[in-house]
Length: 207
Image (tube, rainbow, N blue to C red; front, side):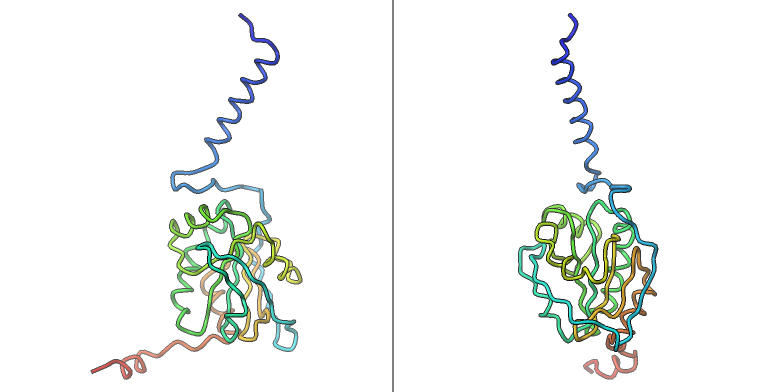
């Protein structure tokens, strides 16, 4: 018996819905990369001389673990702000380099803070576990407070990385994927503490 037009429409919609749901995630439990559903940066880095830097950036947000993060709590440190979301392919490519630089610099008066622009806490947490990210991120998809605070610096591209100096002012911005050496240079320029020399480490070690 031939299907009525209404029955055929319902069946077709059901099939499409099944395909969409099946295509939403990968084996790691994360959403599939979203292709062109974001603006991808070109890797351009802009540095701002100290005299050109604007007022300190300020915002408060909820971290992936549910705690409250006030950006001002990091004042006195060089801060990396990195925008991302789980379905962003460049964010996935960049994640290992971001974590590597964090591991290198976290003892050098530097703090990293991710700004998740889209995901739920569960998806953001899954991303962090999958890529071994150990620094915190705030969930900004609901409030948009962080992105609003950064609007002067036009962080439309995902990912965008901004480095704040110890006064909380933007010292540099990278649009798109930022490589380890580039990010290290941005941190050094913004006032990160020098790495401890091997001789100094050996001298300070207990006998």
